[in-house]
Amino acid sequence: MHLPRRLTAPLAALTVGVLLAGCSSDQPGSPSAATGGPPPAAPDPAPAGAPALQVEVVADGLDHPWDVAQAPDGTLLVDERDGRLSAVLPDGTVQQVQADMDDLFADGETGLMGLVLDPDFAGTRTFYTCQGITDDDGTRIAVLSWTVSAGWTTATRGARPVLDDIPVNEASGRHGGCRLRIDPTGQLLVGTGDNALGTNPQDLTSLAGKVLRLDPRTGQPSDGNPFLGRSDVSPYLWTTGHRNVQGLAVQPGTGTVFAAEQGTDRDDEVTQLRPGGNGGYDPVGQGVYDESVPMTDPETADVLPAAWASGEPTIAVSGATFLDGPQWGSYDGLLLLGVQKDTGVLALRLDGSGGLVEQFRLPELEDSRGRIRTVQTGVDGALYVTTDNGGGADEVLRVTPAG
Image (cartoon, rainbow, N blue to C red; front, side, top):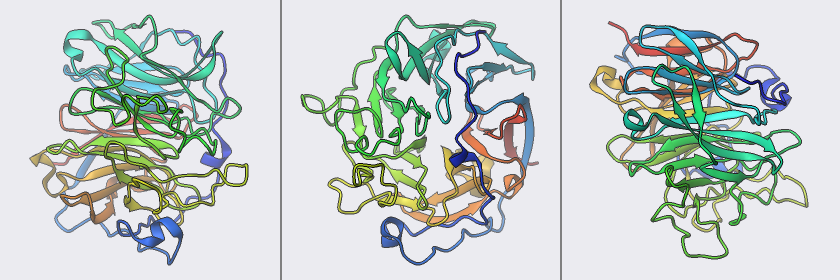
């Protein structure tokens, strides 16, 4: 596999500083979540009768693994921010998947990021990545398609990007996004960052600071997208007004999509999405990137109120998935979020309308594995977790109910 041409350390703003004590949240839609106010309450301890969890290491020696997906045969496909792909076979063998990453742009928070399998992976062996690229046409973020060999040894890149020209912060890689998930109709959702450019979240011609929706096989905007037919708006836009979408999760049974975003000095957020909704982030400021504005301004038209907000301090949520199945007992239906500051996994219980019922941390992962980048439920019902500590010390974990 070819190494990328540009690699630097992660941004200090994301990785340096003391671990913050506790996690906090405002009640859904409360004024303090958007405008400041009294410190919110800390999350509850795990509820009585919660299932004990078993945590196993299925791969180690990794460096900033970003995403993980499980194929129908049980193989795990894992990507690392600096351009590596690995397969964890059902027998436990971990092997590198050779792929051409010669044009990868990896700087700061941008690199090889989101990964998802095609809905018909068993027939097509196609998967998709969202990554920074740099070539004669410039530097940007693109969604690429790949076909992996039957033996999980090589991945061949599609002839052209599925989606190109997502803006990137070329100077630093800051706020590059980029999470991929498949919606219940088989369409590809792409959560992007705002590149730390104040005009991007509310700019309806830009793909930055948005959740996009497209047909992964054709690269065309999806039928039913809210802005189709408007010449002044990108037809790929599904929701707007986001800062840095780091998690997308589809709720089993309802098909409702939730986004997880990292906040500024306060208010990481989880938001229930709806087509045409606006996340309410508008950091234009006085000609600069004004991060003092609310993460969700309630005065924004078509605003999407946060179902959960961290309050102050933030905990840097990353990744999102729902636990699903009776084997999880009282944990069934929880929305899980990776935590990168006060490290661990946050669990949220949501009601039928997406409102917050309870929140707590999974005890078995609390401050024990460092930064968590991704949590993802596999086709086998297990929870897969990637750590994000760097230095070749990262792991992919398999979490299941004990006993």
